[in-house]
Image (cartoon, rainbow over the protein chains, first blue to last red):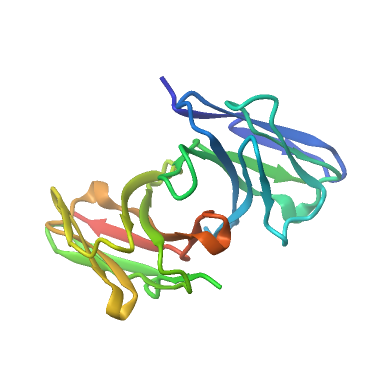
Length: 112
Length: 115
């Protein structure tokens, strides 16, 4: 059983399109996250979300928005995709703040 | 602001050698957590260890060991008798209250273990 899963694993799309990446966790965790890993392997937090609070990294463009239909899911919506959005996006979850975060397998997004 | 520095961008060793990956962190919080993750060539992020700021005891897990020293703000990771399967990018990360407990990652150290 996969603890944190993401779909799709690969996503290739044209500039200007809108796309979503789905994330699900079956660990019963309260907090979920999105991270971006660029081509140089730098990992950067984008969002942290639980049922009470959304924390947004101030550097994230407002074209990116997380949406959580329920506690087990945190989807990432991206509007008007740009070339610079090409990266690997990781979803993660933890029981609570400061607890260990477990990561999904990543989604490689390529914007042409 | 919190910061994590992994000064070694790439390390190459021969199998069976011991290797230490350095991690230096900055935080204003007195309560914080330190982590190491492994990213093998397949790309997933694998959790290795979590330590809180009040526990400076070194930890050993098989061939892996961690040395946490608050006096130097370091949390170094040693692999003993390295193996080819240890080849990966290793990330050190910090979580504290100032960042809403989101992880701040270092830039990673790419370890290549040659047979």
